[in-house]
Length: 361
Image (tube, one colour):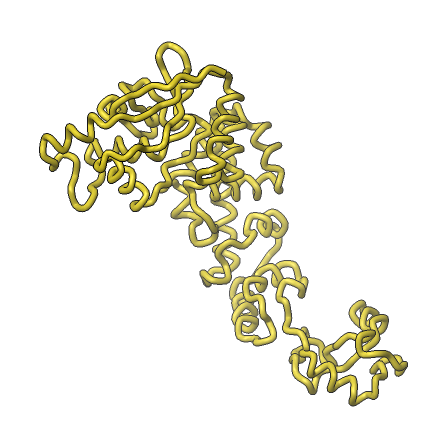
């Protein structure tokens, strides 16, 4: 590994700056690749972005940035992408700071910014070394997500095309699936979710297998089918309960089943109103799987258990044997699935063996 410290000006950094889908992000006379495969999208918030410009205006030093040397006098950013994009966008008039754009500044104010000196470590090494430097340097910064690291490891034509569908602020996946997915496209949450659904959880294996394919259209088509099935099966959208559920997993298992959306909606509404159902987000999984565990049905209180225990003088309501309270479990006399409520009048105490046998009946 060879590292050289170099000083450049903002003027030099912003020279030839462009950022578009066709050519990517370039700067430093088009010799600097600002967004190589292992880099994240631009994620700085307005306050962070403005703080970079304020630091330059005040003449305070910015942290040292790291570039990797590619050869032929070309470079790629290892660390400093967010600061670089902030600087270049401001100089090119993309945003204002305190309501003042760069082009509206006085000549001497512009020159002060353009002549500001940046410290750059230029590093020479292999691709794997560059990735390791990037991971190490960013430990103290905003941590990379797992999917951002996967994009770096499996970078190639497939990842490039997949990011076009799932990873931009205005990517096609956002208007299609934002009501159902949690997270942010630019932090690779949408891409990670889509691959996880499509690959049944084997994300690394899937990306490795398809790394050099020319496009990710199969993944995109699958994603659209998942959302379409979800909307058709549960047409009445409830943001709080539906956003972030495992819709792809549900689709993979139940897409060939026939459902009556109107009948499902009536059941959803009834369960939403049921005060014994404490996990409303689990309603959709329950209706598809039939597994009551998803609902987290409200349990009897310790007071209700003690009352039921004392009423039967510590005997099991089924086998009539005597047990200590801690050796018994509360049970719905009329099962919850048949309309029984979690109230004192519907509570009985069973020994653990009887309760398990009843559950299996």
